Image (cartoon, rainbow, N blue to C red; front, side, top):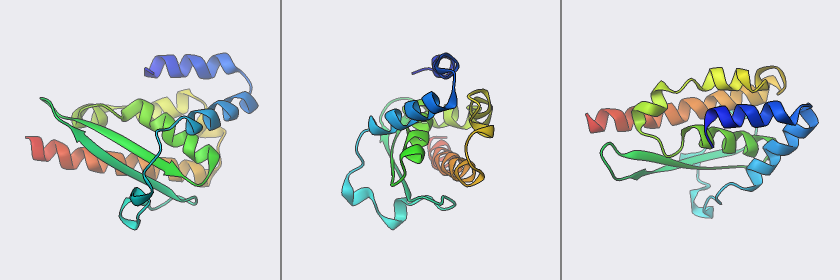
Length: 140
């Protein structure tokens, strides 16, 4: 789903109860993270909930990064799904150039999720950007 489509979906849903349900539904549709990937090395620091993120490199020129994630909290799992829709399958440079904070604000999440979840979301964004930076430098 493209960013604009995601924003339009959120605007269409209207009230926040519907938007939360949509987020939870997105989380339920995430590709399952293999149990072996629920490791300490894949854990995202800075999240109140347990969050795991892993990735694989899809060959190509330039290569693309595909991310998988999971959480023990429904809303957080939905936030992971949202983030992966925005960033997974993109090149390292596209990930680094993406205005995730702007999208987060346009979706209205900035003022509708708790400070702890917001901090956790930004910790996930930073983890993905860190991975992208590592792959951007290894490509150049």
